[in-house]
Amino acid sequence: MHKIYLSYNNIVSSFGFNSNDAVTKIKDEITSLKLVNNKALMPESFYSSLVDKEKLEKEFASLNSKNKYTTLEKMMILSLSKVISASKTKITERTGLIISTTKGNIDALEVNSTHNEDKAYLSELGKAVKTHFGFLKEPLVLSNACVSGVLATSIAKRLIKQDLFDSVFIVSGDLVTKFTVSGFNSFQALSNEPCKPYSKNRTGINIGEVAASILVTKDISNLAPEAVEILGDGTANDANHISGPSRTGEGLFRSVNSALKEAKILASDIDYISAHGTATIFNDEMEAIAFDRLQMNKTPLNSLKGYFGHTLGASGLLETIIGMHSMHKNILFASLGFDEIGVSKTINVIKNSAAKNLTIFLKTASGFGGCNTAAIFKKVKH
Amino acid sequence: MLNGELLYKGSEEEPFADFIKMAYKNLETDYSKFFKMDSLSKLAFLGADVLLKHENVVPEMEENIALVFSNNASSLDTDRKYQKSIEDNDNFYPSPAVFVYTLPNICMGEISIKHKLYSENSFFIFENFNPDYLYAYSAGLIEENKAEKVLCGWVNVDKEEYTAFLYLVTKEKTEIPHTIKEINSRY
Image 1: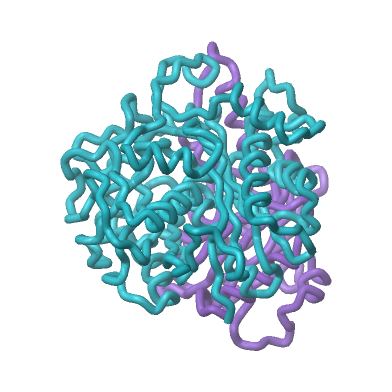
Image 2: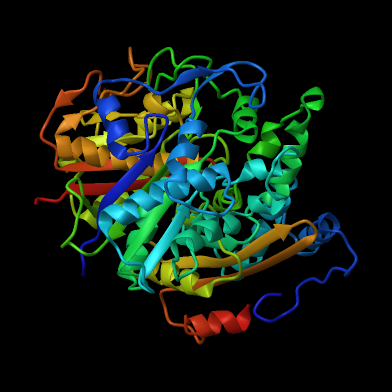
């Protein structure tokens, strides 16, 4: 059986248009969250991380595309174009495309949108990306709430194992829109300050936006320096509630066990956990319970939401990419916003960035609908 | 229809809301949470319920049945409804009970809760029914021991049009082989 790798990657965020722009800032514990005053998004000001649209237009113009694209399509196409060119991959019948998003071009439903309402169909978003790059197979659009970004890597791996493809490009993204901001606000889940995952005084989430892309491949001959092997992955439902996290962390516990079993390693072999950590009271508590049940109390853990906010359908992939760079640099990145522990079980939240030899990390995510996904990645020795 | 046998037939002119309510009554599903669900969840839930009951799936068994669903319109039916509630700042009434259904995978959460399925879930969006991906993905879940069975198919609600086509893939061989051709012939 072939080993499968995550390789070339890109992050389009308010930090810049490459993964390194984001990684450099995270290393220095700098957030991209800012107070946003935009009445079109929300009457009150709120903390968010927004991609600079003027800079995006400028950068996108360098691709010389004549088609009319939505903002999200521009972010996704720009992000993916960098991964395709860095990997020098020729697109064939054996090249797959996965689009990971929760809401896609949902802003096309707004009365004032300059785009046709049909743009809100996620298959239209898939078609725009597919056509731009000349992919030959229909894209698989994954919309599985906040686990989508991690689950996409798992699906890519499984489709390669089933011999449908030799390599799969994943592009993920969601915008900060009135739709999502008002929705999370209606749940009273939005924080009025930069979020503080796992902290005693945490006050909820921030919503942010990025596009993140990656190449998943079985070709070991041309891997990015920060490439990782996917050792195992699993998804499990809480079977408990559609919008509230499980009180026992059941789905997260099961998803990590499923990934560990496939990876044939023990929980103690994990050097670092890139957790979900949205900074809501119930989510962070649920994660602590699950990691306690897994006896991972001492494993260094962070949430990257303090740098970008929650980027929804992109968050899992964004955080996986940061995890790859963290492991490549042998640096544990600080869980920004964390002060005093505010969950009932012992977990080892990374307070300050620190050097550590890293070989294996675990990425987890949980979302509405009771879904939980875990994936385990191992450094590739060059 | 279940295995080619008609279970309930609504009238052609009937709105979806009436059809699904009558179908719920006729199929003797007793689940109070049903009435809180959006249209996509109601349709998926009822389709899954009929099939899983026929297969004698009981919550106590906690069977490892993965859910792999797909459609074209994602949760747009509810998205449009939610968008209307926030469009006008003078008439702004976002509801968390509506917002939560603006994700297509919520319907799989509803099914998981009812049947106690702590299993793999994924929701794919395609332009049209795409058996190639459904086949490869469910075959993989079974081969890699991620699931014993996979409840798989297409559940779509868009304006007044709706379709649900679900089938169960099992590890044990049955008289119907799991092939793209067989899936297509039944869709």
